Length: 261
Ligand SMILES: Nc1ncnc2c1ncn2[C@@H]1O[C@H](COP(=O)(O)OP(=O)(O)O)[C@@H](O)[C@H]1O
Ligand SMILES: [Mg+2]
Figure 1 (cartoon, protein in one colour):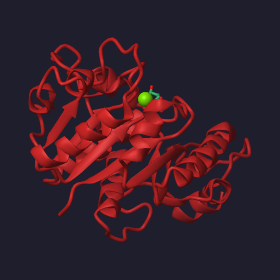
Figure 2 (spheres, helix red, strand yellow):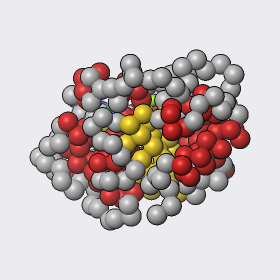
Figure 3 (cartoon, protein in one colour):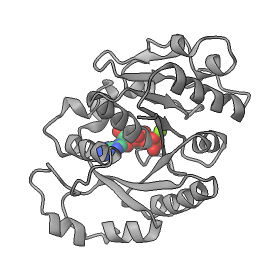
């Protein structure tokens, strides 16, 4: 199988792009897919914290792009799952991205690391990291949640991705309220799909323990029975081309109420 590059994106910060990128990459690796996760949020890098490797970083992607260090040397292998590789964002990013060097780095990764997937985490804006990531991507997951600004951002992001030639653009609804209550008139799943004009790739529930897990460098595999772990499993299966009903494996939910609210 040829290596597929997936960008996780949205022009809005705080919607869960890094959370989705890290967990998607981890679950792909758990399923035996050799996956390279690249932190393309060059100014605000956070994946090293989410993966719990903050103190293990020696080299970063700028060292690779400048030719200072071999890609293989800069990449960290996850201690829990050896099929997950991680390329950290530059430690001191000042001079902008050379788009050509970025593309060359991705090509090298495909050639040298025998990968099935590359997952790119982008910052919450339409800047140069977004453009660099989009230009090398086969697919994009646009992340939104119940908030109207995040939905507007997803719509704009989808449009920009189309203009940059990313054909396969899908929506991930994150931090989804599984209570089914809609007292404050939140937009429904159908509203979000309609407003963003994107096809749905998955719904990730709001998981109250997640921030705490992330502070400890843990991913959703450490709470395997929670619906959030099932949600990432479902998204991964869809990435592999399988048809999986939206809430497969979820416990304690009312499907009809959730979809119609
Ligand atoms: N499904 C979720 N349930 C609960 N909290 C979440 C969820 N997804 C993300 N978060 C929290 O939201 C915050 C922003 O997430 P992050 O992935 O950093 O967003 P972004 O990369 O889009 O800026 C973090 O504190 C994270 O723990
Ligand atoms: Mg982020």
